[in-house]
Amino acid sequence: MADRTIVLRLGAREYRVTIADDGLTIVDDADPLRVRVVGAGEARVGRETARPAWVATAGETQWVFFDGEVFEFEVPREGRRRAPTAVRGSLSAPMPASVVRVDVAPGDRVRKGDSLIILEAMKMELPVRAPADGIVAAVHCTAGDLVKPGVPLIDLE
Image: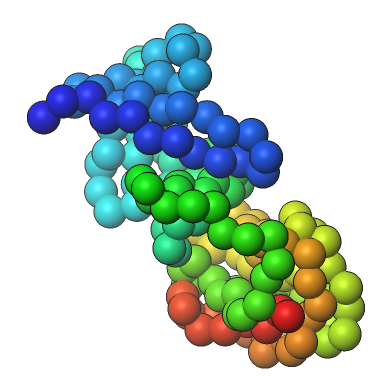
């Protein structure tokens, strides 16, 4: 198998990531980083004292939990154009989680990147953010709810 290169989007910034067969990962020509997959959704990052990282995926979005922080990336498929900035549809949890807080109500105007709901999964907080500007049409959860992946939490228009 040959090295592969993917593009990750974090907000407006794009990162070119090259992954070698041996797990050596290079982001935008920076110092190489060793990433070893140890199970479904779990990896170890680093050399001598590898630290755990967890990955959850839903469609073209990946959430990476590492060193107490959550990073949300868009992983565009080859040959596919970027989605338009207007949003219409539902947002759901990327993995089983608990709703910690709901920050919006029906009728609220939201901007791209606004935190709509805070979830907790694997002892880490995971913000569900607006993928684009829009209006909250409905909220289908409350603080304390246990939610499953793919079940609508918020409808945007």
